[in-house]
Length: 492
Image (tube, rainbow, N blue to C red; front, side, top):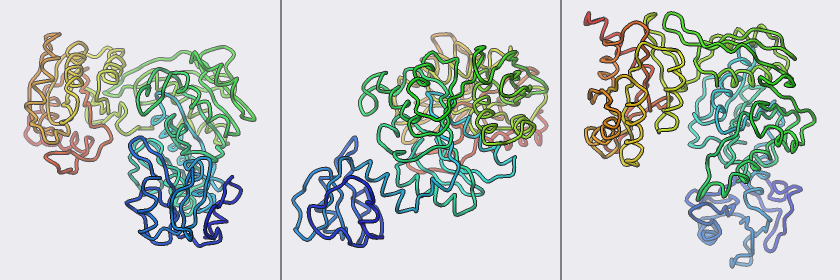
């Protein structure tokens, strides 16, 4: 494409070279520069792309996009913009032929619940007979495609590339987790969402390299509702009014337990039956119906209400929505693996004190006979996290099976020794089985009626990292394998 066309109506100034030059790609990582590309000088948390402009020119870059003039040969095309991040977002959209405008886009922001809600929406849309893509924490998915992104909300170039692939592959919808960090770094700049959802807000991501204050964190999230047609807000969150007040959406709707909410929820019940843990509630207002989910936790009532509301607004009938909800599963998020009608097996990505305490408190509300936790901790990472994991499981679980979880270059036994320091604070009972499949089999073998086996740490991950090698590993497959081994041996 011509550089002039890529820049379009973006505020810019050409200070050298010919703006009509041809550009064959947009590159923002100097290590990936190729002949004929435009190199955008992104300033990151660690380094500044402007430092590598000369290197990019020597590697064959056709143009340099910068925020201030650089000392480069006179024949080099040099474009000055106010923000290279905004420029990358704008140019990426044009380069990939504006894919966001070909899809109905749903964006979700919030401290918690983005992943679960996005999966629920995608599942409902697909059960209604439409193709839907997803971009989020676990990666990007559409049809049979899976792409690892590494970030909850990837860089703008990656977003538009993924949306283009989704649109070309027949997707009509896309749902995206939109992190505050992504908004702050203009990764979603210029994208108009059909629907934006506010889930909740609590202190998080404050510190060096993230947000300078709680207020800045909140204001970044608010920006999503300045680039959406419809806003959906959790009325039960204490800052909801601020978000609604600062919204620029054409229409704003609320959901929650408050009487004034547009979609109201009451009679939340947490239930269990034959190894299945679930939650149900009654909706009234814009939708009158009873919702039942076979996944646990009051928080999933809120996640599902947001999903219900969004799908209702895009025209999906209530019966389809409710049928899809009943069978929805969120990979690695209090994910049920049905292997017995006597006890429950739950997979969860929780791998620190806060998330582990949250999932254990949630499961305690189901009044289990016992909670058996199977977990380890990551090697070459903070020892404090290990102590904390041990302490919270010692406090809230009945028994721990310490095992392997991405030990990297450390010994599993040494990692587990640190966990035991935390367990000792509450005299937590435990055993150690290094092989994770064997550890899961042990828990299954000893589970009694009414027990919950909680597998912590791996969640949706598809690998186990040991001594620099990532081996294929699926927690769900490990559960099934462990169960089959126990059945074959006659131990259960």
